[in-house]
Length: 575
Image 1 (cartoon, helix red, strand yellow):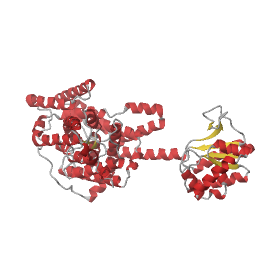
Image 2 (cartoon, helix red, strand yellow):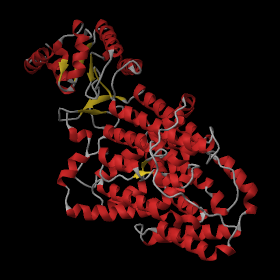
Image 3 (cartoon, one colour):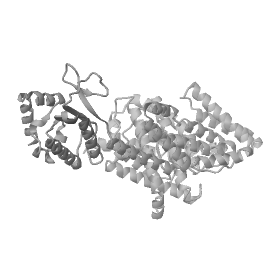
């Protein structure tokens, strides 16, 4: 057993040096500076007191630094997961209440347990059913929902909170006239400042700047701005070890939202980890190890009052851009958060909620991926409409229905594509030994008495009828002139029992009509399955060829010298 694979920190820590620490130190402090206001803001999205956003930045970061295979991914509270938490937990308890907090913490434990078990049993591939168009549609819709929900704090109006955009828009339209002037001015100016900072330099800590500015304004001019809502008292001190309150009926109610968080959180982490991996040659991201790391982070975090956490796009990028190369930057970030929790929480008393809303709105609207939508429209219409279906389902029916729609449609499209793969007839390229697609190469020569049939997928129960129907259709077009069928099987990488039986039945059918039936380019594992299925009982081993041109040449010239040698090799390999 390789201990370094189970505990990746053992891979880099023994060789850690001073030059690496310099970069990690700067990166860790920078991430913490961004994380503190984000943590407070994201806790509010989740319907929790602000302090819980900072709790999420403690134990989960340390656990991930030890067990995560990516050395630069930043773990903690994120906007999307916070909204999913709010949409799920709000159905069971009143936001901000003790029971609400307890359920949110229990949710972290459930999410962590599922992630850990998936990692242990190497089930990371399951999440691959969420394709990129699905994620694009899902995250873009969530960004709009998150942003719309923050208009409550941005404008100082008690808008309804919902994960359905039409409900939010209707309520905003009806109550927009009651906006609070002072709150709105501060919030909108904050939005403009953050955007201006980003235009100048994305590395500038715009969130920290507007937080400090907002606190100073309310501290010195608060008497004239009494209608502006502020964060007020945030408890100081570190979270105590506490077992989450486990109620089995709550686990049953939380399971759908937990599965959504598992999939979304894992995909966020993998996509971020892979993008950072591509920029260096020091480590490789292991998908199943990431599940284990996330699972342990969430389970351990729940013991110290953290709600579900995952990786952050923005903070991971900041970590990498500022010189973070190992998990030490996460440890530095945790130390900064600890100092803040112990000594600096009173500073946030005067922080306007409208400033936090502005930070969230600018951050999440950056997740709306217009470029990907435009690209899919040009590149693949089916993927574009898959993205739009997920986007609209999430937007109008809520988070759970959005993810169910995305996964369901992905599976339907996968089944459709595998059950109706590309098929074509091949023709001989003049003055060569190559056979190419007649629909793409006009110069190829098509023999009236020969059909070279190519099938571009695995051959199994879902598409065996499609194979047979297309083969018969092409054969019928040749008419009575047809004397030879060659199956070019280079693109067939698997065959099941249904596929084998269908092939045997077709071979017999065409043999009875006096038409020879050959195979070319059959891969070894596929050939083994065909032989074990009894194909050799009705067809000679000499009728298997390396290339289509050899099959046609063998039929037309009777040149057996090369083919007998190849057949002997096949027979020995099979035995």
